[in-house]
Length: 171
Image 1 (cartoon, helix red, strand yellow):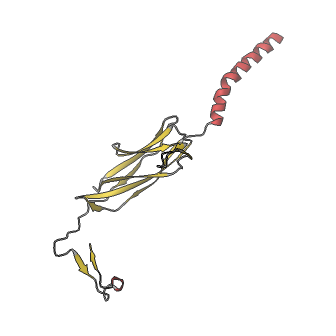
Image 2: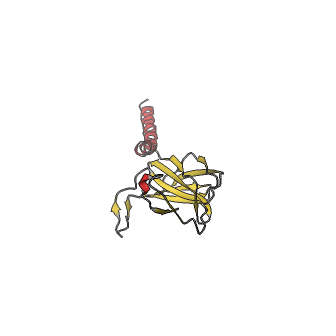
Image 3: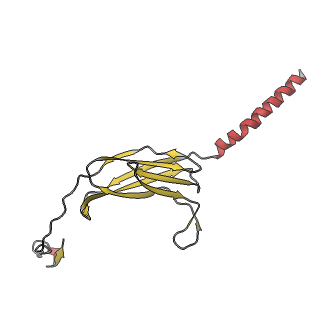
């Protein structure tokens, strides 16, 4: 009986020793999450011969470290990368301490086409997590302002626009 107790203790100890690293890993590690917190779609604007819109995406995360990156994609083709670093170079040529803080905003300029688009975000590196995709509809194409040689400026009077003070303004 004493021998059985000893055998049971060793078996129990082995089980605990095998389970302990898994237990500690679960306790000491943080959960990793990636979240698309906010998506903002600008109105249509005409630029370089095309109707455009700017999509701003606010991305948040937890549990990332300096080996992780977050890739934000628009329709699986355009992408922006957020480097989650413990040290970073603010443009001085020297790395300084301080992680990139959550959340961060990335932007995409796309054609204003009136179609549905999808934003995705995924953390990878040491940790892995995927945000719930967000769908949005881009504004419809806009008509450029027409301006011919005689309409380059217009005189506003103080009777119709008191703050204009008879200034010529361009469009």
